Image 1 (cartoon, rainbow, N blue to C red):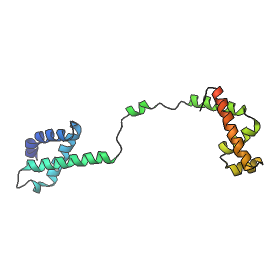
Image 2: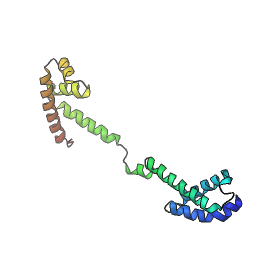
Image 3: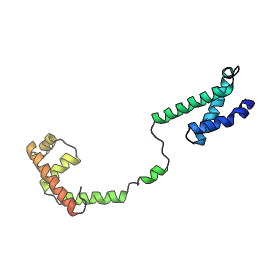
Image 4: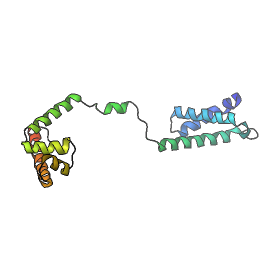
Length: 160
């Protein structure tokens, strides 16, 4: 194995660096795996020149590595996390207060219909039953309530 390494490791590494587009670390991994396979299968190089077999194994390992990288999502380092800003809890709290204040400025019927449909997640029929009005009234009140809420938010500088 030492003789095999001494004779073929240098040219094999240069070939692997070429296969891996200059990535020396991956090329070293390819060389290491190639020599490991030569050690595991000595019969493959016993009666013939070793270099063609070693280069074929290195080429196959490079192809397998390329295919494996293409089959999974691209890896990103910690630098990608720095690009995305962390959520600002203070900003979210201020926005929710402004929305609550805008809701308070609505007419009582509009507040109730928005409370039932958006905050409690009820359907039009469920909200109509809870409020004691027809479903069509819930739909129209919701439409006008959202329009009034948008106006109130625009007045506060929070246009949706």
